[in-house]
Length: 326
Image (cartoon, rainbow, N blue to C red; front, side, top):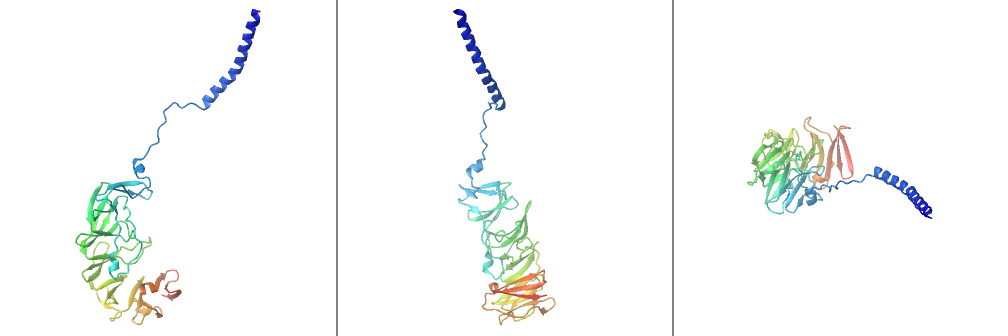
């Protein structure tokens, strides 16, 4: 009887070995292709600024945040008088007769990824993001809602005098505070920015034109400059428009006009009978017929453009376009 019991145990052991061997092999195989990571898992890194300001807000909890075009944080500023804000360009041109570009208000952009204009504590501060310093304090600042070269800024001091600065490695003063007004006419460059090669300036009732390094280009004139080209200046006085050369001499018609604007080197003139025509001052000739206008809102009643492809002046009055070869 004893040999039979041993035989049974031996058979059971063999059966268990047959079952366990494949399982062991499979276990080793899966452990090899999927090794167990025994290293502690690292927590994902967080940016404390992003945590505080996840929406890239410009203002949050008493601080201003400044970003580049890629929404990367350049720096921050703690308000002196909460809340503070990005500065916005003033447009005082509307007080005068100057033909300026009208556009929607917007925050002044960060300049050169370094400078910011901040409205804080009832002042406009020029802030250097790299050194975290307030460089200058102004009463107002003007850049036509980011429509001029970003390095150029028109600034006003507490005595209501205007000057011009240029931002770069340093802050350069192009023209110190000596004008009651500085402005730019509605003339765009190829980059679709307002031309800053010349500025209209005034001291009291005298108006003139300076270049982009601050030198006076014209004689001062009594009245308000509305526009200009390289040869002539349009001046408004007692609701009439006059043409002057840069030496201060009145030209074309001593008695004035209802309205004057410029298209390139050509002059759009509305006479006292409300006739619009285009005049070539250099060659002393009219290059268009008379177009009768209705009303006295001349800035809106017609649009004049120089068509380089056809070498012609195109004038849009209402829904009708007039073409005049030059």
